[in-house]
Image (cartoon, rainbow, N blue to C red; front, side, top):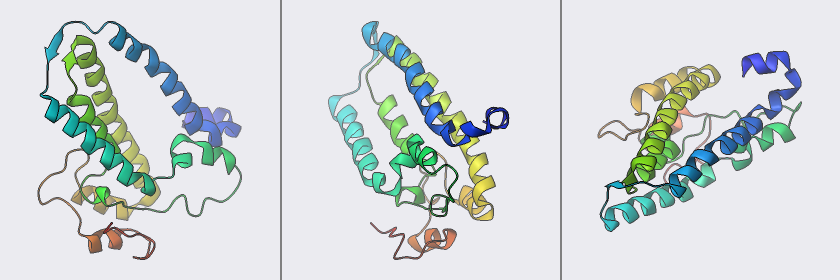
Length: 190
């Protein structure tokens, strides 16, 4: 990103939007091949596990949607606000799920990926996506430490990255203490 925006500074506001567009286009052919040529089944989950994990992931995504700015996530807000100050966008916000895991969407995505019936194609895709998520979360955290500094470092020490762990979570009060929002702005109890 730094090399691209150094060479073409005007692209900086469009970087995330372009990244997401390219990533979406590039993931479609392997996914299509996975579905078109599934191969022999390697592992079959009982339906209650597969559907239960899907329901849990879907509910988690739905609950956490209000804590994410969808336009910011896909990159449209950065493009729309190019040249304008970004006062609210850069606030450190913790959703209820962030109290238990630093990357709830990644965790929910991994839950969904690994509880599908596995054939060779789906296994290969799942392994590749898992590696992408693990590496991407580490790279994202470097950027978050640069952006939020000491509060995010404290958060890193207390909350696991992708897999919730017993005893490693934040209370509502601890989470509020790490963010710059007031309890009325950041209702972590919901």
